[in-house]
Each structure stands twice: as C-alpha cells, then as structure tokens.
Image (cartoon, rainbow, N blue to C red; front, side, top):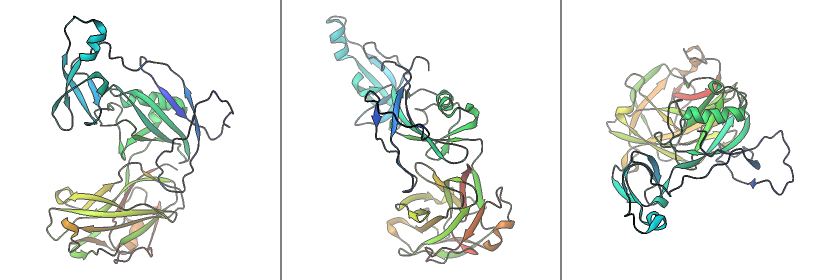
Length: 363
C-alpha cells in the first residue's frame, strides 16, 4: 500500500494537546460501548500524502469499486464505455461511463466516474492488553487493501508486533488474508483492535436442558448477571431455541453495564440455526463488542417471541446451574453469576435462560 494515502487521526491520553492553530482539531465521537466511556478530543497527524484515485484515465475491467447513492454497495467493473476520440480529454471525462456488477443485488448498473470510490475511511478503536481505551484511529485506505496491510499501520501506532493484534468487524474476527471490500467493510465503519493474542471464549452456565417448555411474556424479562474478575470484551450471548414448532423466532434483548442500560435490540433466529445438541443459538452484538472491566456487573435481559409479536411460544431452558463453577469451561473461575432483580420471568442462578456468554479476555 505504498502508493496509497494513509491518513491517521489519533490521540494519546498521555500527551497534552498543543495550542497550535495549524493543528487539525476534530471532535468526532466514536460509538460508545456504554455511557460511562469518556469522550476525548483528539488531534490529527497526516503522515503520508497521496492523491485520490484520478478518473482522468479509465479504470480497468474487474476493478473493485464502491458505488455511491442510491446503490451504496460494492461492485466490480464489467465494461468501460469510452467516448469517441473527437472532442479532447475534457469531453472524454464527461461521457466516460462504466457498467458495474453490484455485489449485493447482483444487478448491472451504468454509472459515471463521480459515482465510484476506490478508497474508504474506517474508524479503528484500539484497546491495550489491559483493556484500557488507548487510541482512536481514522484511516483512509483503498477498498482492496488486505487486513494484513492494515495491521502494519495499526501495529506502528500500537508499537507492538502485528501478530499481537486482532481486528474485528461487527464482532467477527478478521483474518490476515481478508480484503476490506470482500468483507463488506463500508466507508465510516468501525473496526475494533484488541492488542494481545486470544480466541473467542464461550462460558456455559448449564449442563442439562429441559424440553418441557419455558413460557415468555411481552411484559417480563429473563435476566442474569455476570461479574468477571478480569476485563473482557463481550461479543454476544446464548439463547435457547423453541419447542413450540415455529420455523423462526425473534429475541428482544438489552444489556446493563455498571448500572447503565443499553437500548432494546431485536435479533431474528431461524430454528435450524439452533445447535441440535445444546439447543443454543448465539446472538452476536451488532457493531462493537461491549467492554466489561474487572469486577463490573454485566446483565443480559431477553425474551423470545414469534412472528407478529406472538409471545405464546415455548422454549428450552437449562437447570442445575448452581454448580456452574464445576463445569468444564475454559475460564471456570472467571465469573461470578448471580440473580438480578431485573429478572421477572423466572430465570435465576439454578435454572432459566441466557445459558452462555461469548467474549474475549483482555485483562
């Protein structure tokens, strides 16, 4: 990526901002995992200079591009419609057009050069191994850059080897060979970088499952509280499938970190996606993972319902959860699981819903 523009916008909380009018000041606010996260102004530093992709020369076929409104999706150039030679370069630029095969709708559209982008800006949130919010980075890069190339620049800022950094998009870990546009990473998307090696962990609080049928209500919540003794980033949680025969169902959920609640969210689940053995489906948070510092309560509230807001559904549930510390979890001593007053539908420590948590250990 030596021929590409890389614009880094970052802050270091240990360095005081100079009162220099020539510095670029920015008040961009990144999405917060919870309301307790501090909002910090940061300065910008341009470390490389490079021009945006020029449209004075036609792009070649099979070139990946981002097509702007009203399509707002990636595509690949299939044909280049060049004008007749008469009229000069100025006229040529006006009538140059492309036929692009869109990646999502799979339709062919004809667009002008001004509708295409070859670079995007992505927001990178970097956490250190201790779980402290360290730096916010904005990077402008080509859409066909690989994660491995991106890691090189992030590692330079983090001052650690690239193999000690994991990059996530919508809670999914990206591989080094992944390419930005192929992973549908869009302009303005947020990436999370965790410094420190490690895989996604699952913690199960039940070993036995009942099919006798758990009832749900439009006015009650099933909830449980997890308190880790190390800092973690929560990527999602488990829900049990239904026993009442619906082909798909919905989960309404919210979470509470340090007594600060999130907004309510909904997730759709197809019954054939539920694990046949454990009867669990893992709902991954849409967007950034949730940071939970060591010793902080993290509560999940949820309820299931069918199509047309039908709460007359029944599901599996777990029991004998009091002995969760003896179960064969990788981090068996990591959590204290406790009853919460936010649970009004019967879920508690020994039986009920929210059977699992998926997370990364960062502290």
